Amino acid sequence: MPKVTYIEHDGTRHRVEVPVGLSLMRGAIDNNVPGIDADCGGQCACATCHVYVEPAWFDKTGAPIIGSQEESMLSFAAAAEFNSRLACQIAMRKEFDGVTVTMPQGQH
Image 1 (cartoon, rainbow, N blue to C red):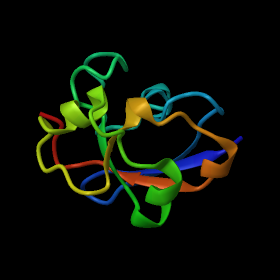
Image 2: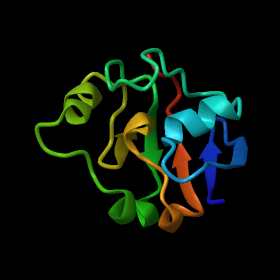
Image 3: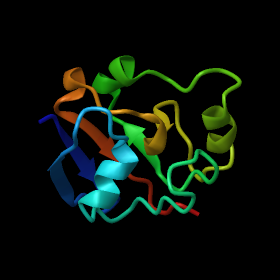
């Protein structure tokens, strides 16, 4: 099963298995990874699953689609960067095995 490394703002790492097809948000919630609040439950309506995709992986995971709900939600996220994504919008794929994401200092 593919693995994801979630890095908390303080540098604490959590390497967990996330089944193919499951969102990175759900993978974090199911494995009790702190730093992803997921207030809307993965409906792309709150931006509380904001993560920074490591630059080496950003081409693979892709950027938010221009004009999408994700892009709109990220405009409300504190400290959004070029590599910001909502973890609820990244579905795990086999080729994402080893992907690393970092959480911002806060989700609100």
